[in-house]
Image (cartoon, rainbow, N blue to C red; front, side, top):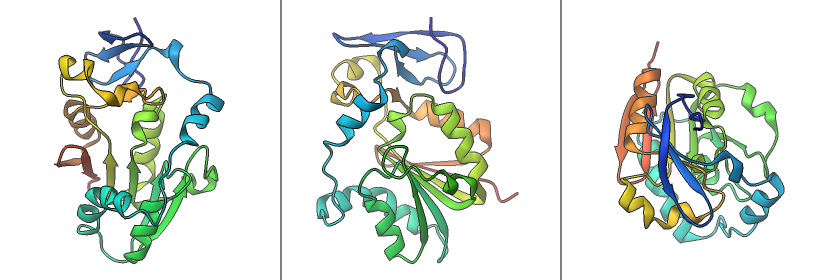
Length: 213
């Protein structure tokens, strides 16, 4: 059986199988993750990302991102410093947050790989539709915690696992670059472990705040 790539718990169970992959679930943090033997090579992963068409001028995509941007902006003092982690080839969210008066850096392992931004600390970190792509989410999670200033916000957008029956019919799992699937329980586990205040907004937006001290 495979260890959890988020909390490293050693007890996991088979959650679902389909024609292409097997999915396991951690019995501790409840993360659902794919069989490590079916992870794509970096060049194959990027080839799929290159097909995405998310343009800064796309009003529909801006409305989609506003589900995270609007509640986050309501909580931030202007100006604040932020990092858009996993920004992709067109950092639309970063542009929206900059337009609101904030200073936003970008990082993406494929499209904005300047690692110097990971040495800084920020008032907020965003990750929209990217956390489900993380092969080893434990590393990114602890990296975020170390970069987030006291009182800072972590804003995540990702579709959430509900139950095995819904998962079996879920289109979200069919994208081969989607390898880590989070649920409300998973984020509750992480927030409790790190002492973060947790807020769920709608079906796919998660806000966490680091304590002031």
